[in-house]
Amino acid sequence: MATIIGKPLPNIPWQDRPAGSCEPIWRYTENPVITRAAVKDANSIFNAAVIPFRDGFAGVFRVDDVTRSQYLVLGKSDDGIHWQLEDKTLYPGYDPRVCEIDGLYCLSWVAPTPTGTTIGIAVSEDFEHWERKEDAVLPVSRNGVLFPRKVGGEYCLFTRPCDKGHTPYGEVYLSRSPDLTYWGKHRFVIKPEQIWESTKVGAGPTPIETDEGWLCFYHGVLTSCNGFTYSIGAMITDRDEPWKVLHRADRYLLAPRELYETVGDVPNVAFPCAALADADTGRIALYYGGADTVVALAFTTVDEVVKTIHEHDLMK
Image (cartoon, rainbow, N blue to C red; front, side):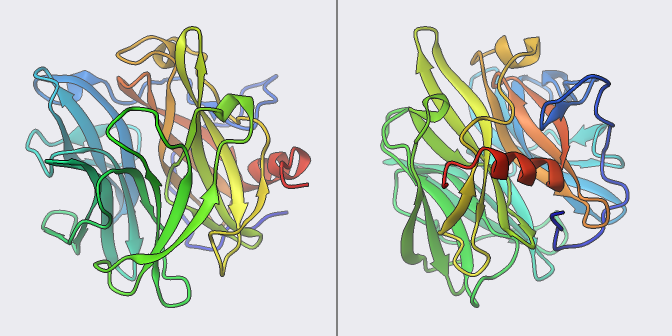
C-alpha cells in the first residue's frame, strides 16, 4: 500500500466510489461545484487552485469576464465544495496553482507580459496580502507548478516552455531556485508518448509526496478531427531528484465525458489544477476545469492511483 507523506486532512471533501464504478478516479455527483454565477460579470470560472486554510479551505480561481479578460480571484470555503469568491482581481493571468511551503502560501500562475506569458510567483502569510516575486522564467511558458517543500534545499518548479501559439512545444521541465527569485538547473521531465497525450503534456496540481515518490497528476492533449481533448494522467517521480520519472501510466485516468466537460467555451477539457490529500486515509480530492467553463471535483485514493500506474506502467 502506498502512503501519503504529509498532514492529516480529516475534513477533506469526499464522496465514496459509486456502485459499479471501476474507474481509478470518480466524479462528484453534484458537479460542477463552481459556475460563472459565483463572480459578477464572469463569462466562465475554472482551473481552481485549492489548499487547506485554517479550519476550512482557500483557493485562487481563474475568471474570464464578459470582455474575455483573464484574471485571478481569491475564494474561501468551509467544506471545499461551497465557495464564496471575491469580485476583485488579485493578478491578471490564468491557470493558478498554490501550495504551502514552510508556512508560506506560494502562488504560481500564467502571467501575461508584452512579449508572451511567463510564470508569476507570489507569496502570502495570510492568504490576503500578497508579495509578488520576480517572474520565474523568460516568456513564453505555461503550467508553472511548485513543489510543496524544498528538495535538496531548493525550491522546485514544473513548467512547460512554449511559444505564443496554443499548441507548439509539449514537454514538461523542472527548474530549481534557492530563493523563489533566481531559477536554473533546468531538467527535462516528460514529453508526449501515447496517443491520448500526443499533442502536448503539462503539469497539473501540486505534487503529492508519497513513500514511492512524488505523485504527479498532469494533463495530456490529443488533437483529433474534432479539435483538442484534455485528459488527466499521472506519474511518480523520484523524491530526491524529482525530474526523474520512475513510473508513468500509459493511459489517462479521467477524460471528458460528462456534459460539463464536453460542452462549454472549450469543449472536451478536463484540466487538473489542485489536489487535496489526507495522509491518514490516503484520500485525494482533485479539482479540475470542465470545458474551460466550470470547476469540477473528483475523488480517488493514493492506493488506487499508484496501483493503476504500476499496472499500466509506461516505464517498464
